[in-house]
Length: 318
Image 1 (cartoon, helix red, strand yellow):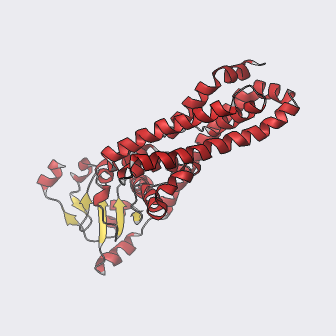
Image 2 (image 1 turned 90 degrees about the vertical axis):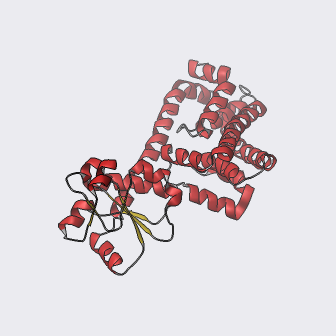
């Protein structure tokens, strides 16, 4: 038996538990290859299917209960922390809340199959006041379904190994490289999706002329000036009615942003990078109607559109 296979067989249960635990805590490490590999080894009797199942479920419960208790105690703060560091751009707090609103605790039965939702679902369950007993019942059920499905998939593949032992030797030689490539591919795909989402926000920019028309028509628009306070010193003006907030302050106060109107962000950086990244974060936190302003402050000023003066005292305070 080759060295990589020997390590997996010897420390397989600890490796499986730790890897699943890290993924369920929110770290971008895919546990699927490890679970499938454990299932395959169970077919050759190098690992116990039942023990692997228990190790995977235990890891899920340790992580999920921790997030559940954090969500119950700290609520929205925990959710914002998860969204800020998550690489999964397609999952946001609002979508998770919507799922709980429609399906309740049943969301926990399939949450682990949805990228990003596996980490967000437990703290949302705690935040919404779900009882610990109900959470444990449904989360355990979801963990059994998820871990069991992946182990069974590996077990089916393991039947091929049992009929042709040379396949196991081949996996032993190249399994480590395949695992590394799988992890790199997983991280690369998530980073690519994140960048694609940022590009989507940049292409969905709001034209200054359109914003001017909205303001002239009396539409309610929540405008946010994301410029650094030092940028206001030589040019102490903002768009009409704009709120001057840093990106961190804005995301920290995301629950105060009105959801019944458009949210327009602007800055002075190239390609509205700061506005696009902030819009991306707010979208994950449940603010859907958010768009960067094309050209930012400089373009608005160049077009000669109205500006509001900022008092020098306010500039120095910022």
